[in-house]
Image (cartoon, rainbow, N blue to C red; front, top):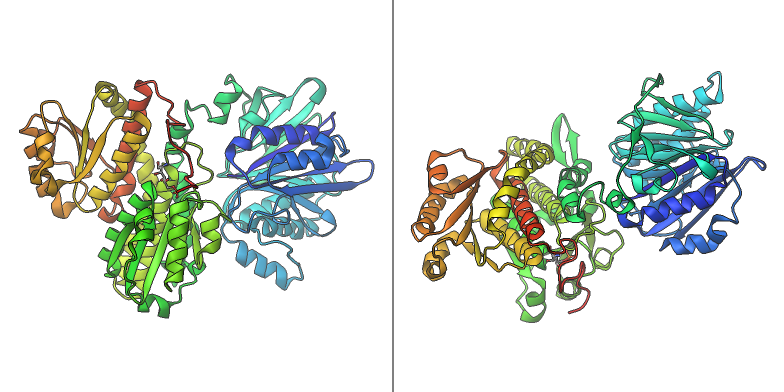
Length: 625
Ligand code: AGP
């Protein structure tokens, strides 16, 4: 996700802004920029560059070449618009009357852009942020408050009430030197009081950016506005009333701060899954004629093309392939289209016959996986329509596919994917509902039920995180285990594939995912006293079968951990350890079921003292064959 920094004080702003952005690099970015207000010249200088922060450092002499005691800075993780200097922040209105940096996603930016263009505003970038900048300019021009401060706070308030989505904004007004404003909704924002040479105030997306100047910060809450100068920090409610908030003293060290106080990036990202799923779903679930509907215009699929689809291939590697397995189950169940999940590394050499009307869905977090990119090129050569589900804007797969449906998980640092996988599932659910409703394969009532379940999904995932203490205790008991089996049927088999991979890749314990009905055809000979078996039983139509499968392995001495949304005495009796999952639509159960499996793998790896974020032999993106 993006990072923002702002400063107003007694020191030159540019070096402080660049230092703060450097501390936010861990969040991942593709471009960066700063804006500095030189009080003497009434000029706001904006410098931005694609690529690493070093380029910005070179362009500004480490900040020494830019004069001014107040400013804002930004590292961009692209969500709307390619990574480029033009799309980099800060964004501003004409004559730089208003300059802003933004972390988050403005969901209604298109309607705001259309409205402003009708009023004569001209846009120069593809970003949602520019719409926010020009909207604020429009509001500020219309304010006639008694003081510049009042004008600014009221204009920001008006803008916040109009914007939909998430934002942390850093704001400069051309006619207010040495003052920086900020506003927050859902995207985090801290404001600190700087001492020493940097005497003044600093604001940022996250604590690491301020720790060099202060350990005393205020956390802004949703719909609050901040105003900082060298000597003052004022905070306003959305009613433009000044409020007081407690100053918190940060005790973390810098490295812990990058992880938001979590021990590892992986556990931090496991906890970011509700936001990743919400940010992927909410911009694409709209209200039409009073009912929820999908808006997947970005896929470029017309209703006529959707009706002509004869087959869907879901292609990926590793966890992306496992997401594709879920995509098969959900799409076949809803849209009644024949589907298959393909390992990219297999598909590219199989010379599979192509069925006319095949849609190929390439799934990739990085968008750079060599096998998946090669499979994409092959499918295009064979005349298939290609749709990429990718987390990195402007990545190779995103650029080369006919269309892309971005996940909004933000940068994922840990090698073992968690939040990006969950965001992939969310995108696949959306696609399945969209295809099925455009093919009239589901009724409006079914669509409403499905979309309401998706809208509630982030809360269910958050609820599933509540089991972490129990799971940690269980993990500590089994940290020395070997040869773990994950068994499930249908969508639960796909869930088991992902759970097994998580355990293997970070704990180095061998495990296998098995279709529960297949175990008796051979592999059950491996079950012996104490063998750990994870049984996933989230699918009602095969729940009874899972019960007998669990009884089968129990009778051979297995220790069973069962996952189920159904509170059932028979399951509690059959299994040694039960994890109750929050109820959701069975088709979306993998999204809640994967959370305990991620936590189990994580806590076992921690107990084994392993490098959870950087497991041996693995890379975050396998860009070679
Ligand atoms: C998942 O935890 C692994 N890191 C790996 O299986 C990964 O999912 C796979 O390499 C695909 O990567 P991609 O999504 O970036 O294409």
